Length: 256
Image 1: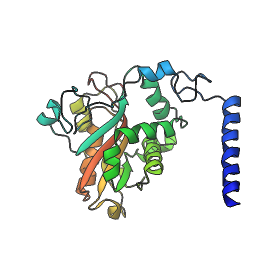
Image 2 (image 1 turned 90 degrees about the horizontal axis):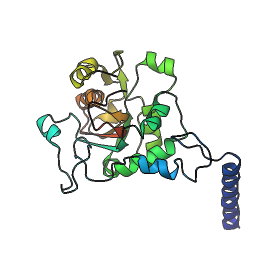
Image 3 (image 1 turned 90 degrees about the vertical axis):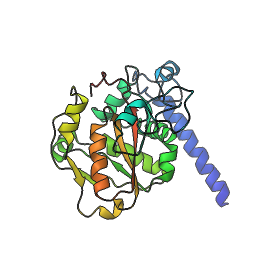
Image 4 (image 1 turned 60 degrees about the vertical axis):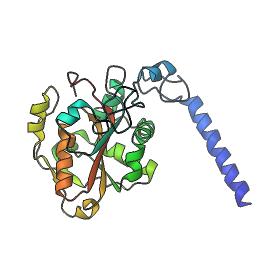
C-alpha cells in the first residue's frame, strides 16, 4: 500500500513538472529565451561553454595540455605557489559564459544554482569527497546590505545540499570594506584585500583541524581567495581547497 502511494506521488510530481514546463518552459541561462529544450541552455549555447573537464593545473585549475599527467602544476604556480592547496573551476570565464556569471553575481538570478552546483561538483569531485566543511567567500556587511545577497554563499549552500558536506556560511567575515577589484592588476588586487578577512568569533570549531573547501563565483588572479585562505589557515584549517564556478584563463581579461 505504501509503495503504491509512493509511486502515485512520484507520478503526480512528474506530471506537475511536465505541466509546469509546458506552461512556463525553462528559460535559457544565456539568452533568457524560453522553450529551447529540457536543459537550462540551448544546444548551441551549451557547445560554446568551455568546461574544464580535461587536464588542469592541480594548484590553480587552469587548463593544461592533454599530454600532462594528473597532478601536474603549471609554470605560474611553480614560480609563485598559491596559498591554497588545490583549485578547480567548472568552466572558463569568457564571452560565451559571462552572462551566466554576471546574472548570478549582479542580478541575483537563482534559477541556475542547481545546474551550477552540478557543474561545480563534477569539476571538484575529489575536493568535495575530502572536504569536512564548505565555506563561502564573504561580502562586507555594507555591500551585503545594499546588494541583498551573497552569490558565493548561494553556491556554497547549493553544493552542500548536493554533496551532503556541511556548510559554514558565516565562518569568515570581511573586516575591511575594500574597493571593487575590477580593473586592478594582480599586484594591486593582492594589496587591496590584504588583511581584509578573518574568522568570525565562535566559529573556530568549524575550521580547526578541518579540510575546508572555499567557494566563490570566479577566480581571476586569486587575490581574494588567497586572502581568505590565509585567514582560514591562521585559524587552524589543516587544508584549504578552492572550488569556483568559473575562472579567468587570460589575466588580461579581468573585468569583474
